[in-house]
Length: 194
Image (cartoon, rainbow, N blue to C red; front, side):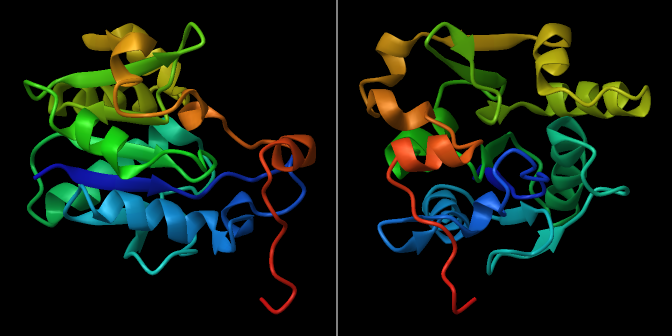
């Protein structure tokens, strides 16, 4: 089975509050993302400060970006016996559902598969093959921090929107970075009791 990684370590500077704590229909984004990932992947780990009920791992220096998080998470998955592709999901994608993740995980082959939405690759909701993970480690060791650099440096199957839209809505890749995004997407702020 494909291992899963939930990225929660972003600084949320533009948002002003931890994006993992935002709520969609009463459910924290981090709990929601963990739930949809665990329906498709095993094992599943959080790469971040431990916002979810998932086992959490950190980068050697936390907050170094999604490429370094992928490398740290993939190493932790491998230590748990998961040696296949890695499904990556960022916590700030509140409309990704299990059918899209299953579609990515079940794609033929074991290579890297990245959906394209609105003409842009979506590397924070993608499947990464072991070759790409090895390339990511090499890039991270040279100081690179961007998943887009990884896409440029490895073999990637880019999946057109009309293909992935057979299992997901157009909103699947709406991400939340700012308070305006949260309002537009109908997300609530963190609960005051937490």
